[in-house]
Structure formats: C-alpha cells, structure tokens
Amino acid sequence: MKLLSSLVLKAAAAAETLTGKRFALLVASSLVATSGIVAIGASGSSGPSPMETAALQSLLEQEDTALAAAPAPAPEPFTPSSSAEATPSPVAGGGGTCAGCSVPPPPAPPAEEEPDPETPVIPDPEPEAEPGPIQHVFVVSVASPGYDAAYGPASQMPYLSATLRPQGVLLTNYSLIDTAALPNAIAAVSGQAPTAATKENCPTYDELVSGNGCVQPVETLSLADQLVGARLRWHGYFEGMTDVEGKPDNCVHPEPGAADTPNATGYVAQLNPFVFFHSLLDLGDCDENDVPLDELAGDLKKADSTANFTYVSPGLCNAGFRGTCPEGAVDGAAAADAFLAKVVPEILASPAYKKDGLLIVAFGAADPAPPTDPAAVAADPRKTGALLVSPLLAPGGTDGAAYGPYSVLRSIEDLFALDPLGKAAGAKVKSFATAFTAGNGGD
Image (cartoon, rainbow, N blue to C red; front, side, top):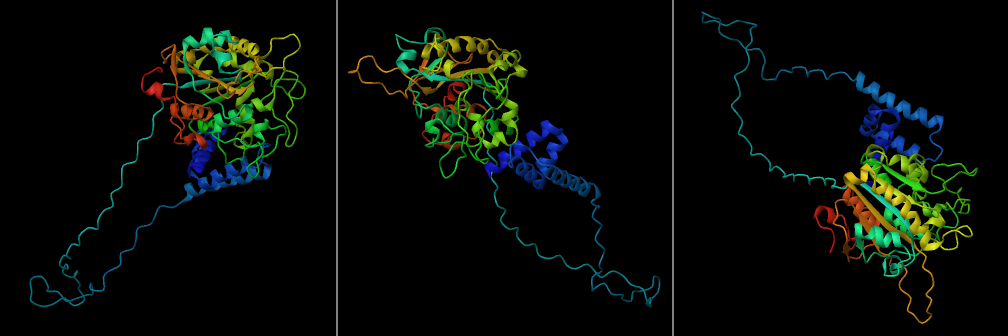
C-alpha cells in the first residue's frame, strides 16, 4: 500500500509540473488515470507512445464527461401504504357518510425503540510527523584514505581535518557497508542491500534479476522518489558528466549490458547512484534532476533555486581514488581534500545553507594506501568517519554512535518527515536527526 501511495503521489507531482494543477488533481483522484500514468511511465525511458498517450487522454476525457453529464438523482415516488384504502367518513355537519371520500388512516402507535447497536470506537488517526528545522541537506561523497589518514594527527586531508572539522560534529564510529563505492551510494539513497554485482561497482550496466545485478526495478523507490511525492526537490551534481561527444549532459549511464567505463573527464556511473533506479529513469526524474556539477554554483545563489536535497560527487580523480589522475596531478586523498576545499565553501556560503542547511561529508568508498610498516595491523578500511556541519549544530562536537550509509538515509528521511526505505527502517539503524530535534550538538 505504501508503494502504491508513493507512486500515486509521485505521478500526481510529475503531472502537475507537466500539465498544470487541474491535471494533477484529476490523476490523483482517478485510480484509472493514475494507473495509466504509472503504467506508461514504467514502460520505458523513451516515454509514452502515441497509442498510450491517446489512451490516457481518452480516460481523462471520459472522466470529465461523466462528471459533467451525471444527472441529479430523481426523488423517489410516493407509494401509499396498503392500509390507506378509501373509507367512509362523516360529512361535516351531518350524521351520514360521504361515499367515495377517503381520509388518511389513523397514525400507528409508535414502535418501541430498539437500543442502538454498539458503535465501534474509531481511534483518532496518528498525527503526521512534521518536517524538522533542516530543510536543505547537502551530501558530498568522496573516497576515504582511512579514518586516521583523514582525521588523525597526521591527516592527509588538512582542509577536512583542520578547517572543516572544527565547524561541525564528527561521527567517529561511521563505517561503510563495503569498500566499493556503489553499494554505499545505493544504500544511502534507497536502503537497498548490496549485491554481488554492486560490490564490484557493476562493471556492466545490468538489470537486477534474482537478487543480483545493478539497475533496480521500477517498484524500488529511492529517496528522490520520496521527495518528489512530498512536493520537495532533489538534485544530483556530478563532475565531468558528458555525452559521447564530450558535451555536458544529464543522467548519463551506459546502455543496458554495456561496460561502465570512465569518460575523458573521469565521470563514471558507479559514482552516480540515481542512474540505477528505473523509478527515476522511466518517469524522467533522472533526466531533469541529475545534472553536471557545473550547474551547482548557479543553483546555490538563491534559496529558491537550491534543492531540498543536494548530492555532490566528483569524478574518479577528485574523489580520491589513487591512480586515476592525469600524470603529475595531485592524487589520492590530497585530490579529494582539494575538491572539498573548492566545493564546500560554496555550499556554506549559500543562502539555503545559512537559513536551514545541513552539510554531510560522507565517505562513499575506501581507498587507503597500504601501510608502510608490514608488521603493523591494518585498520579496518570501512571505518571512515563522517562530518556534519550546520548552523543549527554546536561546532567541534563528536558523536560516537554506530552510523553508516543506512543511517544517512534514515536521518534525511527523519528530517523531511518521510517513511524509512529498505534497511533504513531497521530497528538498529540510528538516526542523527535527533541532534536537531533534541537541540544538542553531539557528545
């Protein structure tokens, strides 16, 4: 039922942006029309065929015609009781009778009132959760060199550890699901568990079938779907995302079954989780909201042009994956730190962030350098830490609770009063949204 409700809300929201509020209301109120929109949207990324469009238009016209032409109900005819037959009655002023005259029968004695059946007690509906004080969330995802290499005394990321960390709350026990990028990204935007293919970063762009593969079926919803259904906005910004001709393009991904290979600027689909959901691909949300990183600066200029949820990912080199940068360029953790030093100040200076924003610097993958001392015990590469920065948080705090990608999703859903998806609904999944409702900034 929640799935159908989410799809109906999303279809109505999408219809409103395309053809106006009247069409959205018709779609939302008509199960037939809503089913048509969802079925057509789910039929493929190329959009409805002329036959499908005509069928949907016919459904809506029939609904309008039926509503306009429906006659008012006619009053029920009076049917006399069998006891109301003609009876003689006295003639006024005389003692005779009036043949052919009739009078109503005497009123029947009142029937004994039966006790009312027990009225079932309908409990009051639970009040819907209200959105919290945070209304703009920014997630920046890069690769981790390891917890100590990022936040320790000899940090390889000085901007993150020395400049940004004192401004926020450090999640000291934040750990990834896997060292690969795609399992963590999909978990953080949908609550879906890793598959064997996603743990390999999906070398080919295959459908998810029988528990393995990459591209989620249309019934699997993402955080982006939830936001659209709630009349909120989302945007994903990806560095170097271009078409086959090298021109900036939206929602770029391989053809079905094709290999996911980086382009000349380092963009690769494995760093863009939204292109792995048919719920976004088939109804056009990805084409509209999954855009090149170059558009971020312009959208940050005004709060009205800044999405409620913003996801930012660099290409392979600037994400901090060693060995992916051009020869002579800054590599590894230093490249990721330089990317943060460029993008994060733009976010922190934006009107939306200053008003009610939250920045989450969440490592989405692990790529630590091998230890220099062979005898040293290697640290768990999945323990990466994460950083929360917000005007509504006390700076310099720490939080030692166990968090992970499912916690990121659960926390964002809590902040926007959305139901948790997938494994984010688990009883053991912690949410850091309570830091804003409880008015504390960490330990």
